[in-house]
Image (cartoon, rainbow, N blue to C red; front, side):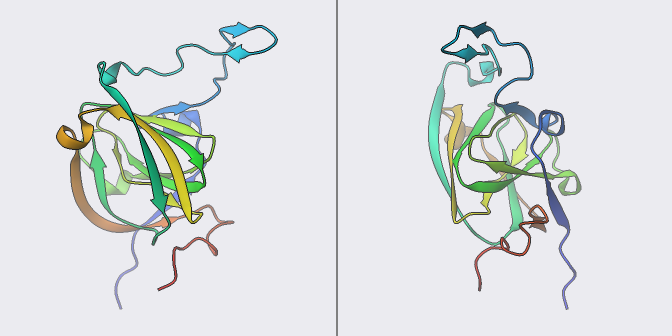
Length: 173
């Protein structure tokens, strides 16, 4: 019998909990920059200067799979935004610096939520709790060719929120 995998329990996505990894994108809790009846607008809600003028978007469809993490990646020179447009997922992240699998965190991210990872923050492709989950990505144009470091890590089982655990363990064998 093999030993049980370490478990990463999903936590709610909020500004304070996500701060070590980057910025939670969304409606700020501060006073809007402009309110004029037809719109309410907050300006300068996230720092994208790390894109250094070469920002691009990407379209990602994550497919439902076993909730086991065995690899992790980071981009040392670029922030990366994940903007969820459809579905619900688990997003695994780790603080910039040397990878410490024991300090990884898992967040549930749903359509309408978005995060901006700091340069160097560890992460992996989202794990959908629905059949698929769709994301708009924002990152530097050179990232996939010149700024990606991947590492194999000890397998960790991802644990969705308790009300999802029974129905979201991934596809049946």
